[in-house]
Length: 349
Image (cartoon, rainbow, N blue to C red; front, top):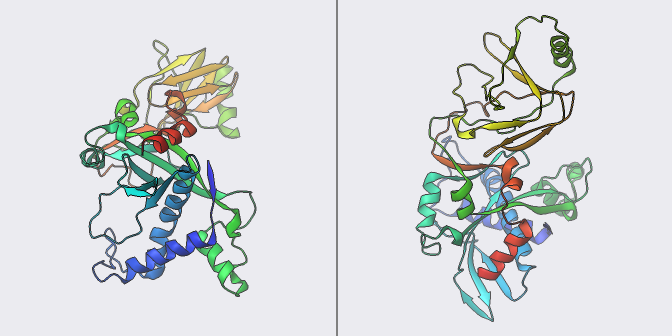
């Protein structure tokens, strides 16, 4: 589901950012860094998120033309309102019947979900009224409609269009930028299938299977032939359950991931060093891995894969309690498709 960005959309978002910057009640100091935020930084902070809201709103409206959805482009001191703040139906303006939150989602995002605090506070919102089926989270991103070597930055594209300076020529045309919906979940989906990740635990990479380089592959194949290779050893599998071993020995095992079952014939090898212990799985035949949180993976016959658990970020310790779904697992949970979810939202909002 996509929406093609227009010049007036970017202009509206820049106008909002400027209003926010000029509001005397708003601080110009960053909450986390304590450094000054100029107008350029403010535009950078707001532009993409607001553009995504505009795109999602237009996609929703395309499903049922009799409803007009209004976004929140007002400046608030404190705000727990949904991103769609009102609905115009049959010429009358009213509050929405669903709480819709629109989030910026990049291709590299591995989880979708909320902090526990946000989930619990929003459930109490008068629109949601303690019913998680009244709360939807839409994840969307900005990308190029057709791939080229131009930079897709929306502000750069806007300056290219509005400035005679050819320094902006490396930015793409506005007409080639689109908003695309990647996922939609209800808070009930999140409650039913999500897993708690506690504060001070680790943010693990849920992408279980990774490709193996040529050098490592050659070393591992020596083991298959019965040769001895320094620091490598074979791990005995028990009950067809894949042991989830962190690459860094000092990191806790990811209990949040649950069990991963092996369907097929496989062998497991570990390379032990002082600071790392990468684990590799060899598929003796076409093999499947399946976990309730991580989802499914298909391994090709006679291939090696890295399957130890890495952490994400420079500081992988979580600062808050969270409830998350693995993005890889979404397609295996039997959730409504994006089209089905859009129809549900438009019908009930």
